[in-house]
Length: 291
Image (tube, rainbow, N blue to C red; front, side, top):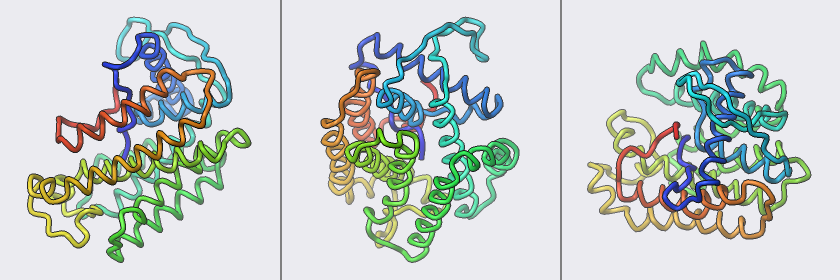
């Protein structure tokens, strides 16, 4: 459920693209410092956007410097992490922990790689994140439990099934921003979470069918293959995704930013639309975590 909130690089100014890359590398570096080098694999587009947005709202200007990368000796420009970045890292850890736990509970067959990732890499760092955000940790646990209950009951409503993750995302940004979090920001992240849940489900239909795992679009529908699914459900899928996209844009119109505005606007106006069109058009592998 991660890696969908990306920029549209072809419609991005170079200054915004390099700023985005600097935030990406900066977050990756900070995860390594706070959580260990192995946890850097959890760096994803969605949390980079979260980090950029929170810094913009809190009016913390980026501090750039050049550092070598673990994957390359060549130095890269990164945004230096700070206390605000540390909060984003904790939320990333909580999200990864509960995602892996949910996968373990829901999977019909053991996934050794995910089990090891949770046991050896994420679990140890989870304790620190839980200590820093106890209320958010309780919320994540209860929302995932609520989602599993709805799945077991065969809940048909996509809106109801998307609500737990949407609520998790909106409360996460509220926990980081505090009094700076307006109702428009909460609404924007709520619908962003809803969009992520829906697009993840659409993107995973064939994989979920083969693995005999839950997918909200299987409820009350006799899934046969991906082609038939998109033929039958195409208009409904487009309506669901575009409704969330429009709600995100409408909320964002009321939010004023002094920093990172170019990259954030590109992501919300163009990147999400591009991702929606890619998934509906079944173009390539839409899940990516590296830029």
